Image 1 (cartoon, rainbow, N blue to C red):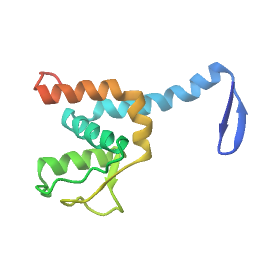
Image 2 (cartoon, rainbow, N blue to C red):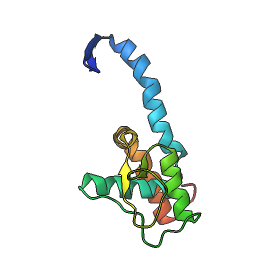
Image 3 (tube, helix red, strand yellow):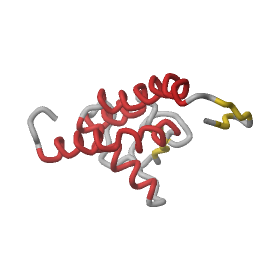
Image 4 (cartoon, one colour):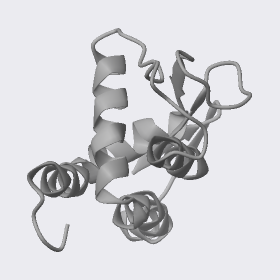
Length: 126
């Protein structure tokens, strides 16, 4: 198997590739396991807006130390989003999707959607 990384091409066996990629896959998908259902719902809203070419903005009703603030912080601490141009979360501020989200989204989408759906429906255990 050939792989190119940072302008270099490497030859690796399928077994070696699995040994290297499995921990990376587990680390990326493990983030979804630890996200709260409400954070999963917010992540989907933010990420899918970005896929449609729109930038999510923090709601005008946003207040620091509120439950919403805790969700934005949870996603930021998971390296999924950040305030555009850095700084603190503020009402109306644009949200930037971090590169780690592009790894997480396709690998853990099913888990994230299930958790988010449980949050929206009030399902127990979500």
